[in-house]
Image 1 (cartoon, one colour):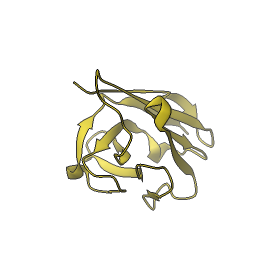
Image 2 (tube, one colour):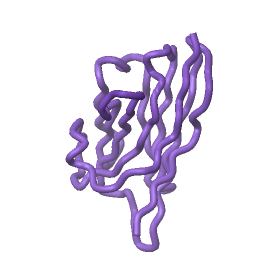
Image 3 (tube, rainbow, N blue to C red):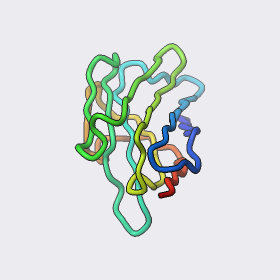
Length: 126
């Protein structure tokens, strides 16, 4: 069984920064070889893509809304993925989810991801 646990969310003022962490675990599971991603869902809105990273960490992709402000990274030895978010604004307020893809590359579609965490709340005050 695969478990993804997000952490690092919280309340931050506009212009501030946060680093989200996604830790994957499972008796025989490793994130090595799989693409991973971050998605978010704001109240009353659909879940949307934020960032994705390929299996090696060498290829990334970002939503236009966060491009230049966020950096996705991963440490396969630790089965962990990160999302560094800078210059946060109230529109970034959402529950942030990490996910593991069934493929090895980057992917912006939530339908390509098999495993999801429970989410971590990010609230940005103005």
